[in-house]
Image (cartoon, rainbow, N blue to C red; front, side, top):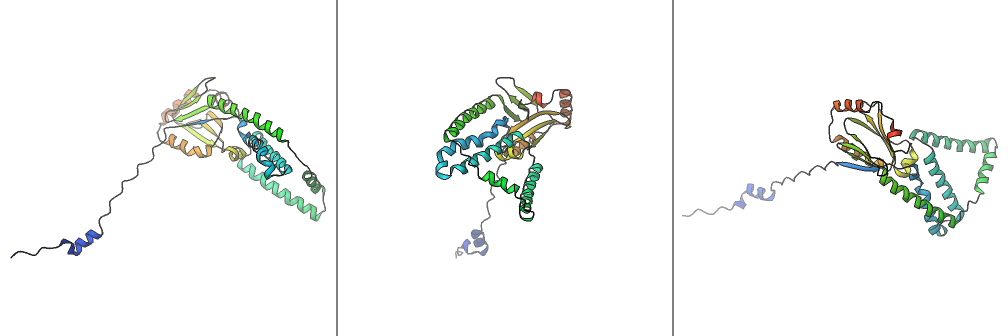
Length: 272
């Protein structure tokens, strides 16, 4: 007599196995490749004039439809003063906070003097400034925007020709087509990214890269006015951390650069 056929699906273990199959392990995502190099440029202080040039180009086109002439003039004056402060002062973070607190304290002090002591000289100065009507000719703005933009373009081309820097795993290179190229072997070096001016950071995200010897006592290069350095510092750190270098190479680097000129002589030529 033949045995009855057994249905495997009727078995509770088989049903559970069918209903809940073992999950398939997902392959691990490969790690992101470490960048092999980064290229950046060091600009002169003229880099920070872009807001006034942009305003000079935009205001004649849209200003008369959106802004009254007096407000348009005040916007241009305040923007120009901000750009001049960025080019002429190095306002660190702490100094900027101090200036801001001092300005607020001065405003409250002036209001108190006006109400409590009836000192009206400062309010008269405020009324005098408010009575001004800084009208700016649109023809003047057009010419300023045209020639200012032309100078900005010349600066941009010159920087990309003569102020190109490249940091790789093995070398730090400075390319200057119309002058001379310069390079440093990686070795054991100390890199510092700093933001000496709050307004420069605000306008262009710009900062300074300083390259020191391994022991940190000798400044080998100073590269100022690097735009968007705030967003590039992480990538620079990845490149520098991807290759280990021995301390002996750092000692050789110090011996090699002992007595060499400072960064103003070897750097980008822009000074601060």
